Image 1: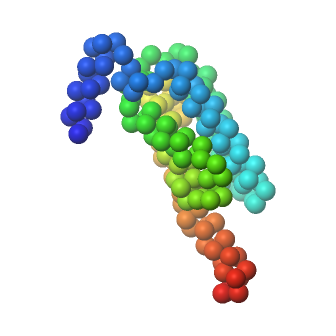
Image 2: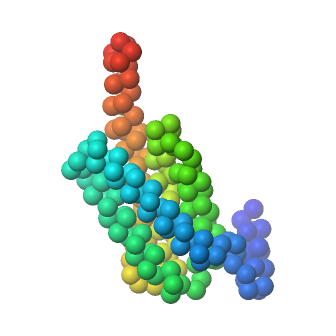
Amino acid sequence: MAEESTVWVTIKRWMGACAAAAEYDDIRAAVGDAQEKVDQAIVVGNFFQEDSRVFEKLNTANEGLGKILESLDKATNICLDIQAVNKIHDAIVVLDKPNIMQSNPQAAADAFDSLFQGFGRLCRHLPPPADEWGTFFESFNLFGNVQKNIYAPYFGRLEAARKGEY
């Protein structure tokens, strides 16, 4: 499978096409979508936990998305990183589902992590100032862990108490 992907990328490059079949406008739209989703998460997070280091990191991540947006116009080879584009796309698909944060918070949390990891990979191909954010975003594993280890147990206990099971 990996060999097929490499061959496909090579063929697409010879043809002058983007290996990921993504246009810059699509990538820019994905960054905008990501910022919108992060803004929503910040609002929800501030409601539950006003002075959290988690949301400080989220605000920092949103700043980094802005830097990526600034750098996209200068980029020439972002379309060659299929993994980055796919991670971003797949995460946006999950986060676009209505009420995903309420109906399946673990899936939303994992999608946020994947979204940021995809942007981290994408940063490898971007000029400054976005290239400096690659490591920060690629190592992002915040939301899945917070959801799994903090929110799920807390809200699980609340639900159990509400049902009289605790």
